Each structure stands twice: as structure tokens, then as C-alpha cells.
Image 1 (tube, rainbow, N blue to C red):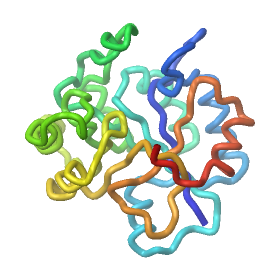
Image 2 (tube, rainbow, N blue to C red; image 1 turned 180 degrees about the horizontal axis):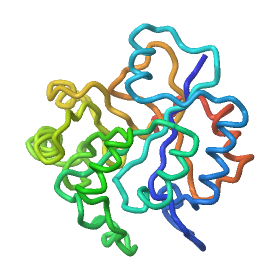
Image 3 (cartoon, helix red, strand yellow; image 1 turned 45 degrees about the vertical axis):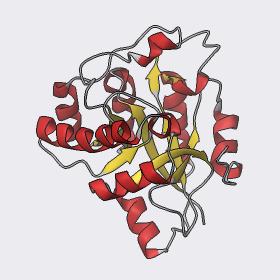
Length: 240
């Protein structure tokens, strides 16, 4: 039985999104999607629970989902967390150590307004309420497309900075833009992370590499039919 790791970015009050749709989700649709998971009996588990399942090679027979949120947008605090709290769903948010309390500066390069990112205070409040956090690097760069020494600094220094700043262990990594290769993956492993989530599309099956975990991107246009379709049928691994 496969497991769906869902990838979200921003959750908020958006309209007329025509580009980069996978980085936006209307909060009312997100609310409906979480209701759907609860109503139809999906089991939502943490990233650590997923790793235990991968390690034991003993997948649940019941429908199982992991919720991940990239970049650490401030709108997670206002829109996503109250809904997750209502259903008592675990999740993990991947944050950028050099941009906490700043803005999504890479949006400017893409011609978009740069939304604010979570502050240290917000992260600590969410952590105390049970939200997990992982590293997304330092500055949101394509790790497989920069010199290896820069990639290494992004991966290693982000772990150190986050742990010193936040006061808890950072065990999980998310590759910005899904950009990875063998060297990047090896650095993530050697740094002491327990997992790496990718942008490879598809479901998690027994034997998956815990440092190349595939995910299913939930985007702006996904209604409940599209959401169900991704959960149940978009399972074949695609790396392209």
C-alpha cells in the first residue's frame, strides 16, 4: 500500500492566480481538503512516523497521508494551522534559516510580490503546539545548480543556524525547487538529517530512498475531485 506525501506552499486568500499555481492554495479549499481526509478516513501521520514505516518496510493498509509545507510562509500561521488544529493533523514546515522573519525574496526574480515568512516567535509558538519543522536550506537556491561548496554551506549551515536559533533539533530536509543530485543528497545524509523530501511526483512505496521522498503537489486549481484524483491515482513515480 502506498502513502501520499502532500506538498503545499502558501495557504491564504488568493484569487486570479495564473502562474506558479503549485505555490498557492486557497484557504477555503485547504479547509475542504482537510475535511475530506478526516471524513473519508485517511490517516494523517508525521514525517517521523513515515520514516519508521519506510525503515520497517511495513506500510499501513489504511489510506495514509503526510502533510508538508515548503518555505515557511507567514500565512501558514493564520490560515493553515487553525484548520490542522481542528482535525489534530500533524505536519512539517520547511523553513529557510537565513530568511526567518524576512520575505520570500526569490519571488522578485519571478516577477511576483514577495510574501512574508514566519518569524522566530511564530515558529516557536507553532512548535509548542505540535508543528514539526525542517530545513529548506538558507536562501532558497537550486542546490544542484550551484558550486558544491555553496550547496554544502546551504545544507550544513542551515541545520546549525536553525538549531541554535530555535533551540530544538532539525532532522529533516527539503530540497528547494526539488533540485538535487547524488552529491547534494550525500551532503544531506552526511550532515545528519534523517530524510530529504523531493519534488519527484508520485506516491511512497516500500523500498523508497528516505532522501528522495516523492510528493504530490497540491495547487491553486485543485478542487475536491482533483484532490481525490491525486490522492488515489497519481502514484507512479515521475522524476522529470
